[in-house]
Length: 362
Ligand SMILES: CC(C)(COP(=O)(O)OP(=O)(O)OC[C@H]1O[C@@H](n2cnc3c(N)ncnc32)[C@H](O)[C@@H]1OP(=O)(O)O)[C@@H](O)C(=O)NCCC(=O)NCCS
Image (cartoon, rainbow, N blue to C red):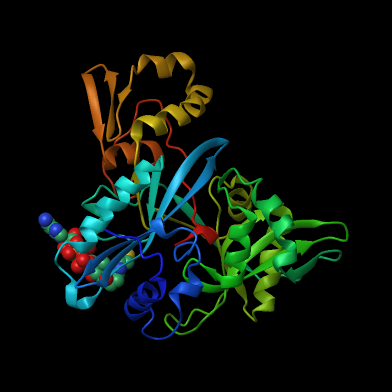
């Protein structure tokens, strides 16, 4: 494995050949991966002196209901077509896990679902909600403006109030707005303001009718006042000339989930937008334990007498000690795959919400 500090152009060229044969530029679209300031995050295999395989690792701090966790996001995974099937991507994924662990990351988010990731313990954990709302004019007194670099302090202040979020430095905001991408599609970020201040922002993938014929705008991240965000989203449908807007609800957003239900809107569910893997079960449990103590009580948590290591945990039950390993431990903490029968669970411990990529998608 090597870090291509001075060979980013060659690496971007490989990823463009694999992912952008119809145009586009991965280097411009994914500034958090192809970051000259962080060559360590670009894990590559060289063959005959050429970069032939890549796994991008982007490590950021995050907050889960106030609990600090570190997240390693994996993206732009590819192997030159002439070098596939030789185990290069597999060994780079193992290397990425070791690297992320060396940086004390707790959770790995992988922007794909395939055997390469499942063999290493990834699964589509958790539950996310989606809805659709019809266009409505923006109420009097509110304005909807495209956000730019000058708005970063407002955007960051709104995002920092989200209960389940990445820690996104202003430098990341700048690069992400410049890239104009949101979860692998071109996007625009809109601020909803009243005469005094920025109340919310709504980030929308630009509609394309190319594949499904569906040209509705797609809200893939929002933050701030739910009242303002909701009215802003509905008004945006009109901006894009669409009768309705599709909305990915942010994790743990009881306000908009409740509102969608009350308004009789369709609410769909899905698992994580890719696969998830815990990198260190013991340290993750150590951090999130406070949330379970608050919910279930100290004595209930104590009674489990759990013992954990990096790969799994065991707890006391009436049938003796139960061990949950790898993907089972991830499912017990963040919720199982939706199709899973008899999903693994830690008795009395409700699964916790999982991070949503939004602008941190790589
Ligand atoms: C996916 C990709 C990166 C794999 O690269 P690679 O270097 O050929 O990967 P490997 O040789 O390590 O593994 C190839 C396959 O064999 C499987 N494999 C490897 N060892 C195995 C084993 N012992 N038993 C069973 N399967 C095995 C891997 O799981 C992988 O399966 P998948 O491609 O269905 O996920 C490559 O095909 C590619 O660039 N594809 C296009 C881009 C892409 O789709 N990237 C992934 C985005 S989510």
